[in-house]
Length: 329
Image (tube, rainbow, N blue to C red):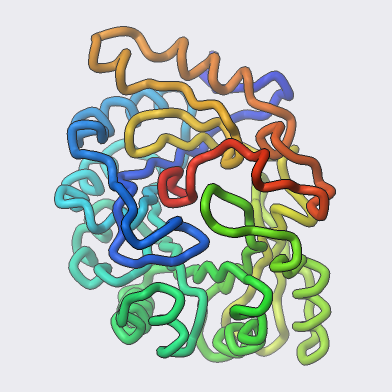
């Protein structure tokens, strides 16, 4: 019988997101609480062999896709070795990165069989990029997106939309898809520790569609099973766009994701308040499969059990979670 990780709502979990580090070379406010963030010491992080061993166990339990995240995964010194090792597991391997260091890893990514890459980019204006990230890296990011396209990678660009910050650039991002075969993914702003979220800063799925529909004729595109995004096409555009509507129209009923933090803890939901430590028992030589199965079995029906779909009533002071950078997205 085929092995699978199934929760109490009969959702099969076959997609593992592994955070390689909580470190990052940018300082985006919605992800990292403050400039003087205390990163985890190295001994607290999963080491390369531990990552590969634990990932192998997940693959044996039916995981078909692994995404590497951070922080910024490519700031980790042994990132290339980890990518190469995971590329041998026979599953779809992909990565989410801010693209500031991607030019150093093109060969490693190709050799590991990576075909699709997600880039985090919230503005197309150089000055605003420096304001949002507190780093002057915009041109490197844009050049590296071009480099990925030239090397035949599928590129998705993740834009976190925050009212008053960058929602006026949505149409600029959509225009980018006219001649470039990329997918723009517009992401509703989500609450995490220290990111000063409130519902007034939220631009919803409906608001985004109305804005884009005012200029373009939008057609819904086919979604894949377990998609977190709702996909759309515009006639005559080489690229496409999608919207991740976590707050206004959640997609929890088809969730197939497991998150493994850089310090070896399972989060069975992006918003879960509880975590299951795998690294400590693993280092003690224990069988960690029961811990994995229990973590998946105890998953809440939706939104980590922390808040409802009525996002206007969310009190961020009552949420218990890590900051985004410490989760790995």
